[in-house]
Amino acid sequence: MNEPMNTLEQADIMELIARAQADDKEALEEVVRRNLPLVSCVLKRFSAWGRDSEELYQQGCMGLVKAI
Image 1 (cartoon, rainbow, N blue to C red):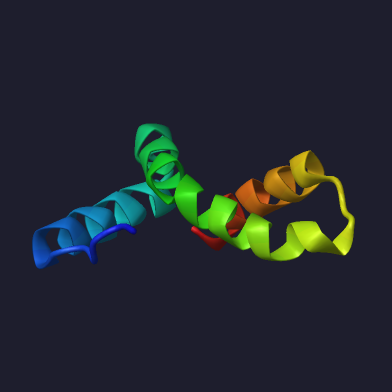
Image 2 (tube, one colour):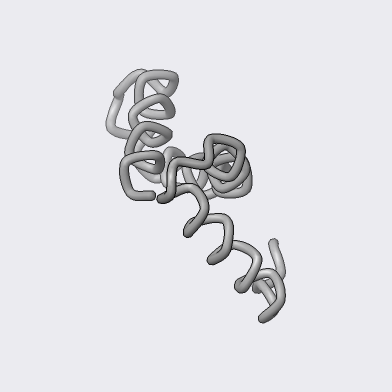
């Protein structure tokens, strides 16, 4: 299982999020890339509902971008 983020990693993520919110496309891509495991984890919880996994993954990624 993944280790919890340390303070330095949290500060790095917060800086990336701030840059992404200021329309820095590279920062947005990096935040999304770092959080894709979260989308996969949530996808596993909902895949038993009989929905298409690829569709759920795409929706999760779009939700992640929208949340940022």
